[in-house]
Image 1: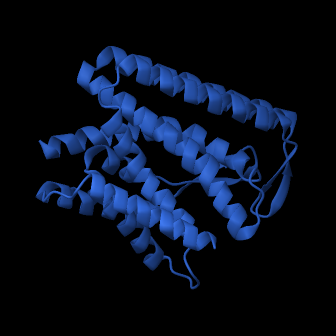
Image 2: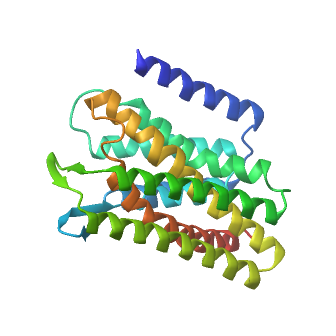
Image 3: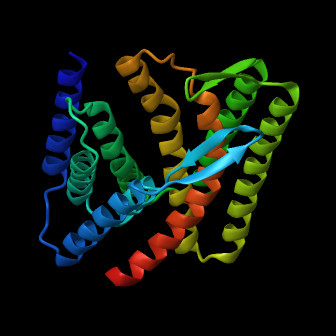
Length: 267
């Protein structure tokens, strides 16, 4: 039943996108779309393993970053096509039998359309308001993460249970605080350095990365895992918090850099 509901949602999103924003013939968009698909597929097969306090290595992947840049630079229709193509090709390359779960297809679609919609509907929003929205979201995420980690006693990683000691809790809280400081320093630095138009797109990059982490990483993916395998919703949040401490600052820097390079090509 959940597969049918997800399929209907994905189709309805496609109908809305193509009806509201009809595709326009654009060779640059098609070429960029193909490049984003290739880059996302390559990064999907690569991962960085980061050891942490004696726990098994955390798997850090960056395949969502080209999708975010695609959302910030391409028309909605092309964004939808890129997302479906990346998901379909990824399934073909990693096919192990069985029926693919459409929840992860929806994740991929949202990873391109969320930045695209943010740019379309917040393009005229003042930078100060965008900055305030980003900071409020980050404070909510950080505060919730700190409360969750502080109340956690054990964590399951790779089917093994590990004790979360006081020293680990303090270390994670320090990492979360460092991430917040780094993010605010990023925003302040680029706010002072960039011109008004460049500063606006930088804030959109920040908001895109943070929004996707909140919606997809912290909410949808754990829910899909609970539906598929019966894994409790909060069981994997500890690892996701640690990953986000890396992904949010790194993602913002990489997405903004990729966006500037792509914008030069489009010009």
